[in-house]
Amino acid sequence: MNVKYIDVNCDVGEGIANESDLFPFISSCNIACGGHYGTKETMKATVDLAITYGVKIGVHPSYPDKENFGRVSIDISKNAFVNSIKKQIRDFVDVLNEKKAVLHHIKPHGALYNDLVKDKGLAIAFLESILAYKEKVVLYSPYKSIIAKEANKQGFMVKYEAFADRNYNSDLSLVSRKSKQALIESPQEVLEHIKVMVEQEKVKNVLGVLEPIKASTFCVHGDCANALDILTYLSKELPKLKIKKSV
Image (cartoon, rainbow, N blue to C red; front, side):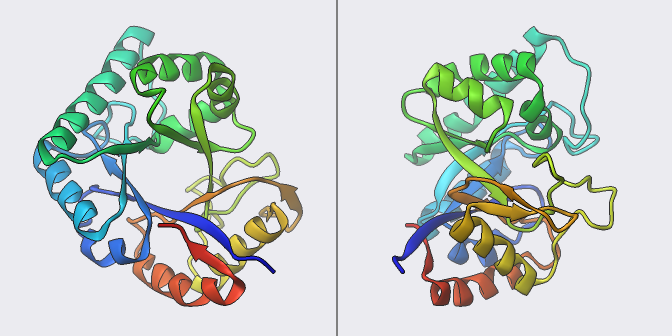
């Protein structure tokens, strides 16, 4: 069996202040850039840590909604939405330029991420807002999502993402965080979840049925209480399955 390499990413810079613990175990990160959380100072501090640990740097734009941490869909005009996403990313790139660091990828956050899965108009508006980065920056997005399909059609570089610590519905949407079944908190169960996705290109949905999926980057949420336990466990156990973290 050949070794398979996967990217392990975390959403960070969100006020948890655990990045120095998590970064040794991940290969890329998604840094909050002011939409749902983040200031220039938090962006700088998180970028510094990413540089120190050799972690690929991504920007994590959101609906402009700090009150709800970007986890609620909001009614916003197209112009306001596009301008907000452009500003969030521009502010982040200003920090990267100051630090002489490179933007590797873009990953939407929270409710925006979920809405982009199914809303074509929103997906087109989002791609318009990141058009300036099309040639050099990767877009993290879910397999079979509207945003991935539109991005591929327009020639964006797309990396399919799956969630290591979240359960899926039969349509590959994430189980709502309102449900007790939303999160996978056992490191052993997270490992099995990833194993099936990598080896079989399938994911076991919340009903126990296997659904086709493709992914090469896997997210462990940095704000989960046991994120460090999950990541340290994966770092030990994944290599035993000939699955290694990409560099």
